[in-house]
Amino acid sequence: MSVHDFMRDYRKQTVSCNRWERIWQERVAFELRPHYTWVTLGKIRALTPGRGDGSAGLDWLCALADKHRVRLEGIVEPFGDNPPMTEWQLDRFYERHGFTIVDAWPNSYIERKALTVN
Image 1 (spheres, one colour):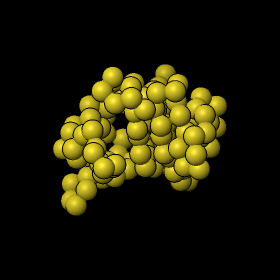
Image 2 (cartoon, one colour):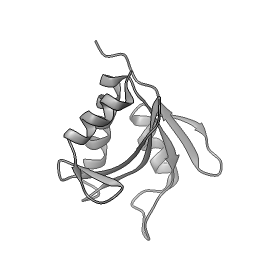
Image 3 (spheres, rainbow, N blue to C red):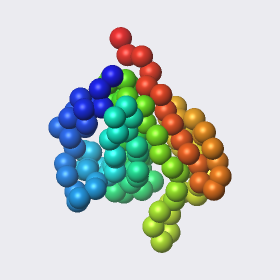
Image 4 (spheres, rainbow, N blue to C red):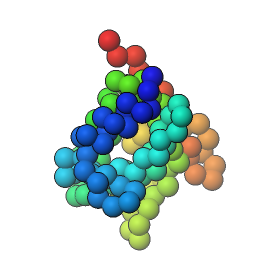
């Protein structure tokens, strides 16, 4: 398990957008914060909502986490003036990608333990 290797791989496959976000395949912006043994997913944002890009991007990020055996975690919080998904919808979105809702008050805390990759 190596957060360092995960972040190096992540940076190689994304492009810096601003101080906090990196873009994957010109489709999805991620905001990640590395820690010693896990990575916090601060935000995922499809550049064009409604096309499945967010799901594709999260699939890619989860596969990368599995490759490096890194745990992902975060807080579910809709953002923006007119969020494309409610918190309930976001909870279901993350659950479909293997995240567990650890605590749902006041905002859901989620985590996804890395799957073993052969």
